[in-house]
Image (cartoon, rainbow, N blue to C red; front, side):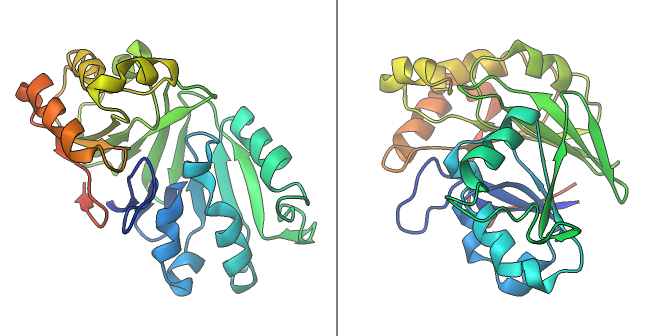
Length: 254
């Protein structure tokens, strides 16, 4: 598999884009503002969107993507998420008030999109690639994902706070190569990180101490204006793991 980072920021500013990752040419992991930089032809090839949770920075491009390429496709685009996330999309986005309900448009028998509920621990197989739903702990129901090519695995935590259940699953992965984990706040905002169920450098250090596998570690969801400070604090807090900042345009092959 090849994963390209379209967006990995905790906000927008200049060239920064919010969370979205393109696996091969047909799978999105989240659909933040990074999707907007893709060409129409590239967007039209996307068949699957795996959503971690319902917050706007992770879903905001779904309505525009579906609307833009729906008439170029001969089958619906499938949105995968846990039930509360799908319910939020139905109720608050594709509700014919904020955006048209493309799960029944342009025709019920030939809609532009469809929903598929996933459950914690479930694995979806797509042409030899496996995507497994991992536990996350956030202000709204949330998950992470494991992408497994058979030769190697990449884990994306999604937005999460302290989460023992995640490490129970990650430590079972024999072919783990990459771990993308969030750290949304700098250390002086630790209280805010805890209240909003995100990580800060000291909490990240506590979480990585639970990792029993060897992997390259990348930090995502850094806040604009605090990126350098937070990465410096991470470097001090978790020296042994040598985590690096995730960058837009970065590619992983596994």
